[in-house]
Amino acid sequence: MIRLFDLSLQLNGFQIKKAKAELDKIVRFSEEEYVTFLENKKREIVDFHLNHNSFYKDLVGDKNAENWENLPILNKQNLQKPLEERLSRGYSKANIYLNKTSGSSGTPFVFAKDKYSHALTWASNIMRFGWFGIDFNHSYQARFYGIPMDFIGYQKERFKDFLTHRFRFPVFDLSDEILEKFLKKFKTKKFDYINGYTSSIVLFAKFLEQKSIILNEICPTLKACFVTSEMLFETDKILLEKQFGIPIISEYGASELDLIAFENPKGEWQINAETLFVEILDENNIPVPHGTEGKIVITSLFNKANPFIRYEIGDIGILDEKSTPQKPILKKLIGRTNDVAILPSGKKSPGLTFYYVTKSIIEDDGNVKEFIIKQTQLDTFEIEYVAETALVSEQIQKIKEAIALYLEPNLHFTFTRKTILERTKRGKLKQFKSYL
Image (cartoon, rainbow, N blue to C red; front, side):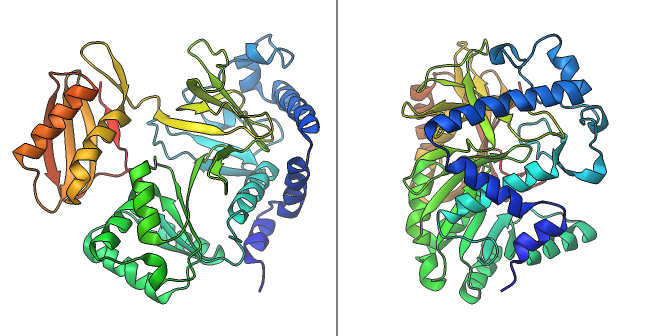
């Protein structure tokens, strides 16, 4: 069989063979060799951008790579200026990979990667999926994703799906009739794995649960399911394992960077230390000890087209105490920094706390399919939900009591039942949003 996937990368100017060889070399380093490699790469990428990128030079001023901790923290606002002003000398639209972020953090922008650094991203993906017996050239993917709705964009995406050996299930409408159609595809196609947005895959699993169907009994070729872009809650993971009958693997990535962390076969969230350098910093940009939460700051070690050096991605996380430079483990991803609720008492609480509390009560009977929480005022929240039948006053009372217990009393809630929840243009579900 032709290695279509590798071939399409090669034809687009991404040197996948060279990238795979380099990645293979990095993975084989001893602990000592790795530390040397990392220090060299950090210095190299900073020097490169100081010499070839006026945007970065202006940002850094008179500092240099010698004192890493003095280098500025780059954030999304810094990057919201025309790409021409941020590209390194020698790079133009002709020799880069160009894309834009989804804006799920509320701050979309256009970014560039040089073609070799993008080839390394693919090499890294190929290696990590390979841990679970998935080969992009031959394995058939069931893809739960958004899709452009204009005719040309739609056809282009479908053609790309054909080349990369995947079948797409668009996630904008996940009504029972549509999920029934999804199910039919699993009965007739030999999918090797599932990949896509957590919330849509979880909805599909709930649909299967209602029908008492185990997915790999009707599609025995399935080996694994990879969820991305949204938090996977422990209860949902258990549901997915039960209804799919295959391993469920969480990935955490950012389109402008790479795969950041990927669950390894031991169930640890292993950070990609081959093409990225990940730091966890406090408010004053000082590294925190392993085991302590802080903001996630990432350096792309290979991208010469666009500087992503000490880039604050907008997420909060904790590195495991057993992390080493060569094998950092992400113990916990706490969510986006802009998803924090500020309460009347001055207490700050991750929006996910509401989600956990509400979720534990709402989902007991499987009536509620999905919900989102919006904070409209300091003490006022709106919960929008999709359900077979409306919530009754006892359920609402139970939710209010739990929230008073976990967060604080005297918060006001309105509950609105919807037929469909609003997703981003790409089909992601934003679970908590503060409008303050």
